[in-house]
Image (cartoon, rainbow, N blue to C red):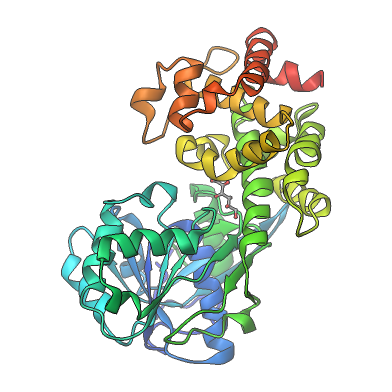
Length: 435
Ligand code: CS2
């Protein structure tokens, strides 16, 4: 079958064609998530509101997606899957792509380019540390900047905008350039599993061309952001994004409920041998345990937006059997993710004098998971920047690596130890079936 490109006869036309709009956004991280989320909002926004807002994508390390997009003249498809139903669209929001490692000069020129008025990032939790390669590159480019620019973190971090502002501000140490920059907070949400060969085959039959950069995603997609763009922005509001003064309540609810429960299912599911999130949720007791985790531990920490109906909707989304989101994918980088999605819940409940029992269960499952064995003895891979130290860590050492001082909280520790004994004795599936 012919490869997707601008002259391939396809069954589905993009809303805009690469080249129709000039470049206005520089995006770091060509992840499946970016291609199914911000790029789709941006294509809709350009189609509805116009403007030169096409995306220059920067791949921080891997060449695979970049090569595929170049071979396809910047076109790729998003497959929306919902149980047995699937629908594909071809997206034309990219102007061009660059590789940070081998083309740093071109990336720096784009960071200085006045046509670029928005920089967006999906670089994952671990990149938000002083001295990370991608932040270093951005800061070098910003030193050349003379016109206003919004830097928009689209990663799952609490206070992502202010976090980025802090890191960039410290590294730049230049008040004149900082005065040109804004750091709007955002909440991003769409479940986008890693692309599989089955995704590519399904896209091929719906689009009528072979697409090596295709992604599959759930129907749900949400983007909430602070409207603080000194150089302007695409009409993302016309594309369904919510512009608001304060993103914090949305972000906290999403991190603690959606991402917190996702990780809970990932660890408790992987221990029980469930390959995917939907398979984990279908195990006896898992759905009910997640509802209790949300109601007893998470909901009391969130006062500004309704939690229980949101939690029910999240569980429904996780049950989408077509997503096949691997528990091992969600389980990766736990040392970086859990502080964002679980430890805030723990800290708030402890400050209120309560011991969050289900959150302690998730911590116990994580400790067991990083030990490297599923309940049936199968070995589990550990994809985590701290893997070297975590593999042979005792429970106290693992908790200490997650957050200094966490292991010293005696009531919490007693609850984690109780769950660890239960998990050891009955396995995750046995423990949750009996709850
Ligand atoms: C997931 C997220 O892989 C993970 O850690 O929890 O990527 C999740 O799918 C997204 O945040 C959904 O918006």
